[in-house]
Length: 475
Figure 1 (tube, rainbow, N blue to C red):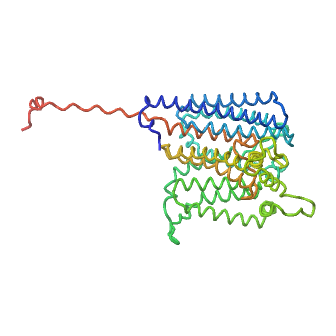
Figure 2: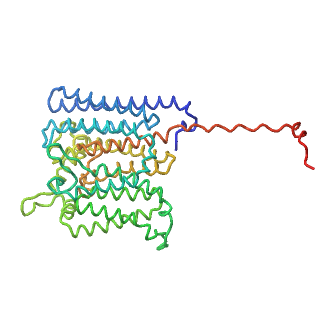
Figure 3: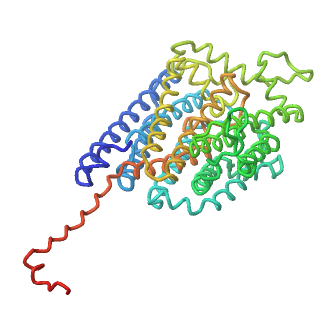
């Protein structure tokens, strides 16, 4: 529901804006102090001294989110004041853990400097989105264009040679030699969200029209199933061609949730999950790489293969690390998260669980939960149908990506190639998620902005009786 400010006019809303922005600034400063203090603990534990990098990282963090705060204050003054501080704190905790891994000289590092650089670029994109997209509803006009570009970006790595697109068994990247690499799927998810939100708003009647009734359920008509079938074929194609279970789950889950939000019919979710389960079973029986992922998930303690390979080593190391952390963790800088391969990206959740324990890991997950709740609250409060679907899809993208990552690390589902939003090392993920948060804040600003009350029409003065007496009556 909109806040009371949305019903009282722009004049009474101005003090509320100053209060919200002051709260946001206070929480950002608190996040910067907390992150700097955590960096101090890491350096004292690892180096027994305090280096200059500590103050540089703390200052860079404060400057970056100070810029983001003033951008929100300038272009989205009514936006939710909790979203940006939550993002800042999650990003800061990621920087702390990456700095800790840098001090351990983990393979692939250093990570902290790159992460700050990508955070700076992400904040620039964040500011540009807020500055140039004045109304989120204009994005609906480019829905089909966004859908076409999103599908092209999603399928591109699978069509390229493995030498420039494959890593760790998944074809997700496009490498540009010494210039680095990019993961197109991270940006494709936002474009596809725009497409599905605009498409479902324009074709909502087709999906709410019941077909034949069978087993007490009103099933959709066959011709209305085409979007779900297309999404199913595309997600299974990603699973097969790009060897990526995570992106396949993320994409298909977004489609199903947006269908449910648009129609409020659970039959779409049941039908979609059934189709996905059927496709996954077929893929498991036909493709070796799918079998390897599933078998590793089912038995992480399996003995070595005939050639000495150990595909479950990463998952097993992460599970042992979290078990070593226990309830309260080994302490920042006192564990051994570097024993797990790719601890800075895919398995940063297990690194946090080892050094901060179950309590610290639950606190981080609670921050994600609060961020998603504020996004869903924005979806409920915004007045237009496109904004409701789009904000709900953006919020669900964060929680589903987190579920896929945390589920893979803890052994709940097979391992995937996704990274924890704002937390793990990864340039493409960080940039795309800053764009996602900027769009969510733009919708939040529209939802909370006070509506200018319509001017009452002037009442027409009654005709005096004296005037009526002068009117000659027709004979």
